[in-house]
Image (tube, rainbow, N blue to C red; front, side, top):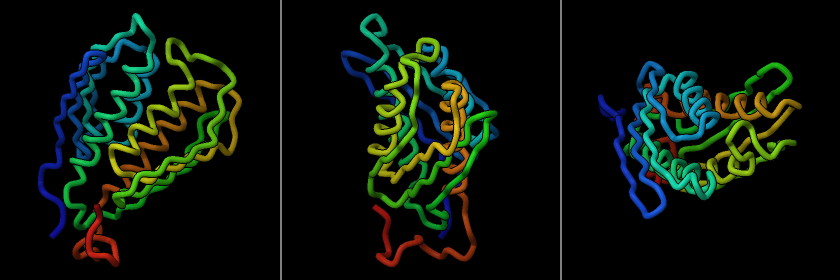
Length: 200
């Protein structure tokens, strides 16, 4: 019963458009090495690692001469796969996590379920097309890819916020805190937290 001692996931995905390598340890100290070629995206992933206490390596070579779409979406695919792999058989974990995170004018709620069924919903609204070199429409594509590949139910609610940087950063940090809670163990959970007897 309970989780394995080492839940680290190491996944690489190579296509004609991107080469994405992710190493994800949900039981880390918040250390990260991030290189996607998109500065603001690197900043968001580093914040995700720091505030979730995840050790995270993300190395991406993508077709940024086209645009950021493939790089960001494919990173979401691989990170989602790593999140799923690190969860293992899900025995002993809390499964659910939520957090409401303030960042100056922004207030964002993230709620998630590692229950094995993918669903994504968000009302996060940006008023700028870009934050640095990060195209804000890619926020949805990234988290949609994460939720689909992690088989995760993922919801965001924007409770307040005007500054696009703050809204995005509050979202990534809230996601980190919610995921950290979902990975946590509870000695009262003897197998998996489901009446079905499995989470897949």
